Length: 206
Ligand code: GDP
Image (tube, rainbow, N blue to C red; front, side, top):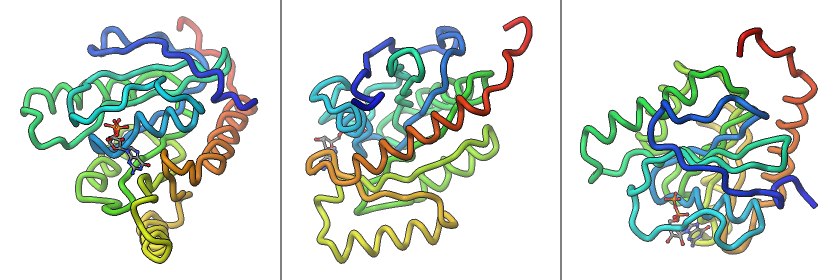
């Protein structure tokens, strides 16, 4: 059984003041609204409806925390870049996600979920650039909805993203066919192991 099979919903956080205290290492999922983050969480956990899959993009502006037993957490960041989300909500997004990333928690890695048909859009590039100014963490790019592309186009998308991300781990993924799910689980489990092995003593007063 993988650690992901133990996934349980912990809480949805709408305001940075409500962020849970730092606990075990966390893996955060980011991506544009509607790219399939919730579906990817369900696929990784091997569950149908742990995370709510939406047909209406951009509604959820909460950070959703899931426990993976006592040893790790999965964190679903609110999707970015939904055009119809009004400006104050975008400011809210930046404040909430910024507080999460900038805090004292241990982030073992970040999963950037993208649509294999439109990988690394301008918004994804903006997110990556902003992310690098806030927090350094290992990154994996998931090219989700790969089932919608023929094999040749999948390969082109994979090569293109790997080249543009300077060889960062990149996985073709499908929440429907489960392509790439085991590969992704293995990588995330390795991050969590590495996080546990490098664990520093807790900072006094936290
Ligand atoms: P989120 O907003 O990023 O959490 O996206 P959701 O997980 O709610 O998915 C958005 C839409 O994309 C839903 O209609 C899903 O059924 C669909 N979807 C998600 N993953 C896949 C996939 O791998 N393949 C296909 N064909 N559709 C997907």
